[in-house]
Amino acid sequence: MKRLLSLCDAVALTGLGTLFAVVAFNVLGRALFDATGHAVNLMIPGAIEISRYALMVTVLASLPRAAEAGMVRVDLLIDHLPPGLATLLDRLWALAIAAFGAATAWLLISEALLQITRGDATQDLELPMWLLTGFAGLAMSALTLVGLWLALRGARG
Amino acid sequence: MSSQETGFLGIAVLLVLLALGCPVGIAMILVGFAGFAAIIGIAPALNILQSGAFETASNYSFTLVPLFLLMGSLVSRAGLSRDLFLAARRFTYGWNGGLAVAGVIASAAFSTVSGSSLATASTMTRVAYPEMRAQGYDPRLAAGSLAAGGTLGIMIPPSIALLLYALITEQSVGTMFLAGFLPGLLAFALYVVCVTIMARFWRPSAAHMDTDPGSLGLAFRRFLPVAILFGMVMGGLYGGLFTPTEAGGVGAALALILAIFRGLRWPDLVGALTETVRVSATIFVILIGAEIFGFLLSVSQISFSMADMIREAGWAPWQLMLGVVVFYLVLGCFMESLAMILLTVPIFYPLVIDAGFDPIWFGVIAVVTVETGLISPPVGMNLFVVRGAADDLELKDIMIGVLPFVLTDIIRLAILMAFPAVALTLPRLLG
Image 1 (cartoon, chains in turn cyan, blue):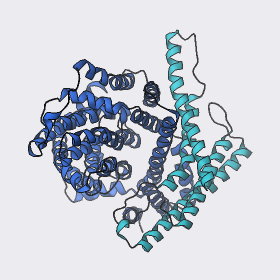
Image 2: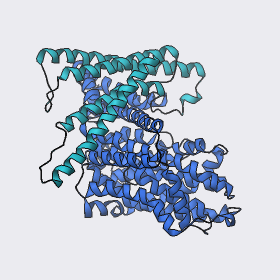
Image 3: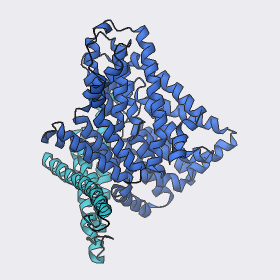
Image 4: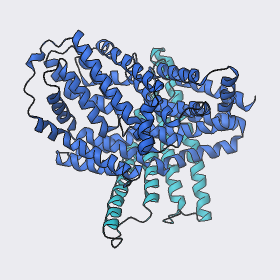
């Protein structure tokens, strides 16, 4: 499970690095474009689309780690419950995370399979949509595994 | 069961799940999905589950969230906080309680590039608290001023809370940042007054030992990097040079350059990126939850029902607003600030707008109230952040120390409610 989480971390960091680089470089490119009277165009084609999907990669790949590290919750009551009951609830919430991950993964992977047959592509760069949707499905599958792992361990999700 | 009843039941179940420790985003997803399925059907509910996750995560408007977080994270690692504190110390040299005032000034300055209350409170406590204690400051005065000073990060632009409010209510991010500026300055001014008064009662035992803080020129030079970073990001945004997303990207790039010049090492950079990814993930789980829960609110038409109920009960708009503010103040004592914004704004926003309030003004009121929650005992997040950053502090001392600041926040809230122009003047002039 640690390897899976490390892999997800690496993918999420790559997504964030890409998002940051594309946005920052494009601002520079546009400044140069304006400064040279539209003679030099170093702007990245489809930068908005790349940014969108880099964000998607960052967010969905980081969900398994967010589940493992602990999501935002209200601890006021649960901290005062008997330890057995608190652990039971923690397992239940971890299962809820797994259920959300599993349902979404199933829907996204089914959609990706349909997109292969339809040949859907993104609007600007015409990237195959199934790659992006399929990636999202895999990320949600990883979330499912982490949720199940947390439920078995009785750890807080 | 009617759709309205399903909506009300959904809110009740959501509150129970939250009380039982279910992660906020997951609770919103579960309730939103189940409620939508009960009203419309399982197949459309599965569709919103899929689109809620994928479309929210790939929404271009949201790209600015991790970029501003990255900027704040890099700035925190660039060691600017110490320079800001030393510079602020120069301006307050010789004042009674001058170091505590310097802590508030440095927190305000750090907020202009950090955007995060927790980062501001944590960083400034590490820098300022040891020096205050060495100079004989009462731990209640030291901790209270630093915990409260940290909250300035949630109001002074670029605030992540104002940014999220703008995104979920489809307001302009630039306008929201402008609206937060004067209330942020008001908070800063009131905190300085509060610290000065507190220092009369909890008099520092050895303020005369304050060491020579250096020249005014040096103090200005220490403020300069933050001033340049803030000026370029906000100047570019309001000068029409950047979109909000680009402002976040430029801010992060400038923060990276600044951090490299100040000795940022590779592990620090990886740390900043990792922290950004983790905080983004926790925010996006709630954003996905808010999206799916929002579908339930829409199809159940619960906002219309609540608006009708309020009209039938004969509530005046100010009574509604007072009710919302009191609810926020109470909830803020128990709940994380950004989660609270994302959870409650979709419910209250339609009611408040229906009652005739300005959406920008309400955003400021909501964030100010949430900000108060950050230092409200027993579970205000900044109390624990300050406790975590200073080993010898008792939580009891922090809680006593922040009480005058909670009172100050309530006074500010009253000023903002009585005089909406404080929040709306800048957006009207420059927006």
